[in-house]
Amino acid sequence: MRVAAVIPAYKEKGRIGDVVRAMLQRADRVFVVDDGSGDGTGAEARVAGAEVLTHALNRGQGAALRTGVDAALEDGADVIVHVDADGQHDPDAVPALLAPIRAGDADIVLGSRFMGVNAEGMPASRRALLWAARQFSSGVLGITRTLTDPTNGMRAMTAAAARDIDFRQDRMAHCTEILRLISHSRWLARTREVPVKVRYTADTLAKGQKAGDAFKVVWQMVIGSFND
Amino acid sequence: MTQLQLFFIAAFALAIAATLRRRRQGNISRKETIGWTALWMIAIVVVTRPEIASRAAAALGVGRGADAVVYVSVAALFYLVFRVFVRIDKLERDLTSVVRREALDHHRDGKRSS
Image (cartoon, rainbow over all chains, first blue to last red; front, side, top):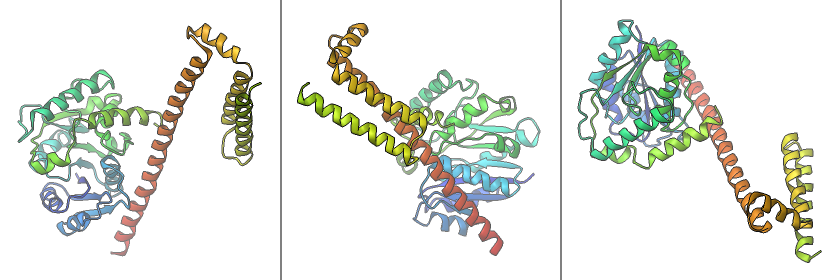
């Protein structure tokens, strides 16, 4: 089974190299999409051993992820793992993500921060925000409540599922959109969640989502629905 | 007819002319042309015969005709702004498609030459 990791990256110089090296130990290929960083992120990833695709302009995490998925599918990947570039995701969680797919029990495996593995350094405000996101996702968007972590970017999909989950949100709403597409498709029955550990640091929290971003996600979903 | 009424009628007539010109140039669809022309014509009718706005206001439960015009205008502006947002989102997606195609093509070319 050919496993490809896809890492969308924006201004991650100094961090991306370690992430790529860690992922190369757990995947056959690593695709980094340098999303118009202009700071050497792509060069660092290439030196670390990744296949690098470069967006000439910054188009957002969702757009970069989609580019990487397209490249991985073109390359013949059987399974695609989505990983963040900032080092928050624990590379040791990859085998757990792949296990249900290898066993033939699932086509999509989602990482969850709310299945008994405590996130390191997660502030209470972030926990409250994620709880609110989950309520909105299930109450308004119809994302099944069985999925416990609607904003976690660590997931794995078979090539067939990756082709079918046609997410189009360019920016941060893509996480929610992916879960909405799964919830309303035949893939829901072939979806599992596994606990993953996430490490929050001052750096990643500064760059990560803010409370106000929740409103942006809602706005992007509403406006985007008119172009779907 | 007051000077203000004449001014508005002239302005709306120019707007109709501009709409028809954009249609001839192929910049807007037939549906858009009909919509915009109808809007400007209604505006001319309301300016020419303000009592129509007053009757409409009474029917809607709004005090004065002028108030009804303001309310309807605000609602129309909200709708237009929303349409602009949707159009921008579409343009953003088109831009992403171009950027993605260029990134994938460049990556393929790099693999072929290496």
